[in-house]
Amino acid sequence: MSNEESIQCPCGTIIRDPKQYKIVFIRKEALEIDILCPNDLCYLKELGYVKFEVNDDNSIKLIKAEFNTPFVTWNSSRIGYEKTSEELKKHLRKIVLELIDWDKIKWYLREGASETKFEDISKVEGNN
Image (cartoon, rainbow, N blue to C red; front, side, top):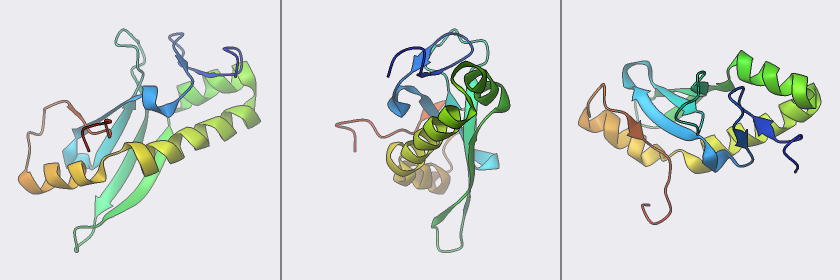
């Protein structure tokens, strides 16, 4: 996929693979995971989120996963709505099913880890 057809943050950062996003759990009280631009200097920073709830049996139920409107609109204007929709759905699917370490999320919630600490909760090779 060429740069012209790739997903891009409005800051200019090309995102070819969902592994590039920073996936952090800083809104524990809201049960929300943030999807951030890989560029630390990005002015938009948050590109999307994953909202979930914890059931009585301690299982996790996904409520919503989506990218924010400015990010979607930027890409739709660049590569078209259909291509953007298709690619961002693939990105969200991979983030939710493969990249978020749900066991780590459960641990943070169970242990009452810091409410303000910036925690990367993505699965990292060699760290599983």
